[in-house]
Structure formats: C-alpha cells, structure tokens
Length: 207
Length: 310
Image 1: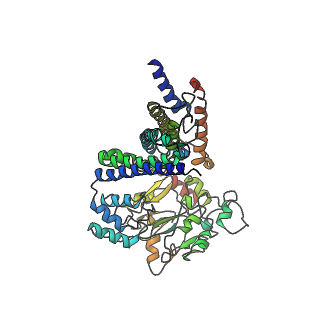
Image 2 (image 1 turned 90 degrees about the vertical axis):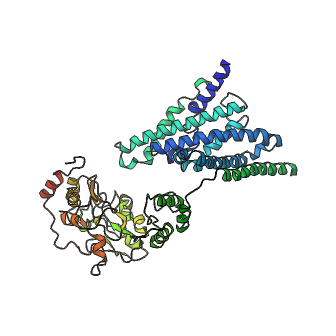
Image 3 (image 1 turned 120 degrees about the vertical axis):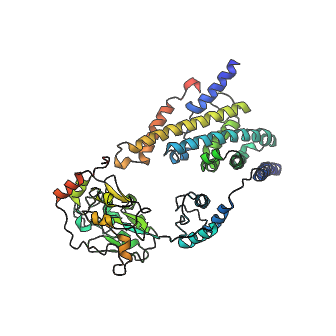
C-alpha cells in the first residue's frame, strides 16, 4: 500500500515539477507566452487545461488499449486518432458545460475551444498512453490510474508554471525595464531564468 | 502493400470518428441551450467576418454584447451605417448615426520642434527613424518626411507649411494604412478618431513637461487647464499628456480655448466646415506666439503634475 502511494506521489511530483512540461521540456509554449499577460487569463487557461488534459488522457488511454492495440494500428495512427478524440471531447465538454454550468462555461470562455489543438494536451495524452514513451523511469507502461495521475501532474505543472510566470509579468509591466527590452524580450529572459530554476530540479528522486 | 493493415487503419479511424460524431450529435440535442433568438437575428445582420475591429473575438460575441446592451448598435466598426441600421431594425430599436473613423495626427511640432542633427539621407520617416532614433529630439513627434502621404491610397494627406501631414477628412476612409506606415504610429502619433465632433490633442510625447518644453514650443505641458475647462469630463491628463475620451467629448471647444499652448484644436468640426476642408487648416500657426519658457514652466509645475490630485 505504502509503495503504491509512493509510486503515485513520485508520478505526480515528477510530472508536475521535475519534468515540468513548460519549463523543462518546452512543450506548449504558445499559451505560455500568449495568455500569461494577466493573472486572470492564465488562471482561466490553467483551469481549462487541467480539465481537458485529464479527460483527454483518460479517453486516449481507452482508445489506445481497447481499439488501436487490438487492431495493431497504434504505432502510426495514434496522432490522428488522439487528435480526433481530443477535438470531439472538447466539443462535447463545451456543450455539456454550457448546459450544466454556464458560470464555468463563461469563466473558461475562449480557452476551452483554443486548447483543442494545444500540443501540451496531445503530448500529455501520448505520454500517458503509449508504452515506453517518456515514463520517467517509473514504468514501461501506464495503467489507467497511473495515466490519470500522470496527466494530472502534467496539468498541475502547466498551471503552476503559467500562473507563476503571469505573476512575474504583471510585476514586470510596472518595473523600470529598459525601453528596448520592454514587453516580449523581457518576458523571454524571465522565462529563461524561470526555466533555470525548474531544470535545477532534474534528477530529483531519480525521476 | 498490406491491404489488411490499411483496412484496419481506416476502420479504426472510422470507428473513432463515428463514435465521436454520434456522441456530439446526441449531445447537441440533449444539451441544447435555448439561446436568445435576438442574438441570431443580430448575428445575421453583422458582416460575419470575425475581424475583431469592435474589440470582441467574433461577430457572435459582438452580437451577444449588443443584445445584452453592453455596446450600442453601432458597435460594428467594419459595417458602418448600413450594418448599424440593420442591427437596430433586428432589435426594433432606433438607429443612430455612425461616425466614421479618420486618421488624426497627434503632433503639432513640425518646424516648431527641435532637431538633434541635420539629416540628409533618404527623405523617408522610416529610414530616419532607424538612424539613432531619428533627427527629432522629441521621442514621439512627427518627422514630417511624409511616409504617410506617400502611403495614402486616397490622396487624403499632404504636408503643410509647418512640415506636418494634414488629413483631408472628406477623402480619408479610415483604412489605417498611414497609421501602419508611420514609424511612430505605434506610439500614437497617428491614430484613428471619430471624424465629427472631437478635439485633437496635437502632442503624443510622454516626456516630462519640462523636458518636452525644451525641445518643442507646441507641446502639451500637462497644465490640466483643459481638464478643468471641460464641462463633460472628457479630457484628462494621463502620464503628462492630455487624452480625449471621444465617447464623452461633445466638441464644445472649451479646452481649445483653455489650452495655453494651442496644442488642442477642433480637428473634426473645423474640417467639415466648407471653408476649411483640411484638418488644422485654421492654423499654419498664424499669430502663434509661443509662451516664454518661464511662463510655461510655471504652468507645468503648478498643480498639474500627475498623481497629485488637488
């Protein structure tokens, strides 16, 4: 029992911090710069990603293990199949949310349809699903529970990095930055320094 | 080629696609949300180009905002009067006149502004701007080499005696090409403003007033006299520069009278009068006597510094 708990904790920390999808592996950088201008949008994006990523990975795990592997077509068909699943899932979630929880629908707003084609979502789904594909030395193949926990970790890491960065950028807006560096250049430098911090965690717990 | 594998691949994608499609089909029925029929009506009146000029991400979002009453029926910038009338008809409300946007120059410097060096290269604002930031001392002013004039496809701009581009409001279509061409368009030297009614502040520098006064005799000195003169609270000194709120401005011209620098003028009003079809035509600065520096400095240092509200 203890070992299982430890395994899942490592999975979560490894996915969220040690192998942070944004700042250590540089996947999904477009929203990282695109929506990190204000705290409000980055919190919305982080929530939407957490939501969609977890659902998408669960769905792709089922598709991979129950459909693509039995048919023997997974190796070359996983990207179109996953994209199809993720896109329709987001559409479905959007319709459901609009009916069931208009407040949440409004809060997520434009970010929900936008992350349909987000590479971080596809990356998390692929990593959680495909055997032997970036498993942080923890397993060769994730079971369903592991896949969900791993994806939760990735999404939490994504949100954490995005919100931290948004906080920094909001401060930078009022900081005395030299005119030539104002705006995006300063954001790039800040992202680089922030990335240093995350890369420093690499190898922690051997993951 | 392994035909079985191809068939399996097609089959797998077909299954995923079918399941997803049927799921979505059921969901669109089950989770259908009764939307306001007026939104559909307004949406069908809008151009549907999702250009974003109104400030909303899509025409649908604009339609929602119009129906919710957050913006007026004239919200569609691209559609103009025709669309505003159609939207008003769809909602059963009264339409109102759309003011077309025209280009407005926010600099009165020209020959009144100091130059840092004698420039003798290619006579283009774009090229002088790349040379040590340009020959103007002012970091925001107009170079006057006429890139906007050359770029205007409607021949609506010309350089006047002051070395500044003026806009013929009868010819300007609001295409914004001059704003994009202007190397200082991004900092608001040329900007879009409603063609009728507003006043124009002919300065866009955010330097400290004292510094600004040292290199340009026409600049805004942030004295806040316009702010105090305005009866409708439509002009404010923001970061040492008078800024007009075009939605609130009624074009009464009190600020024009109050401005000790002649930095504000009635651009739109003046120009629609037949006698002067060109903005600022009233003034090739006739009879303009710049204040002595002491006077201006006294004004700029009186209660006017931002942050110190009286």
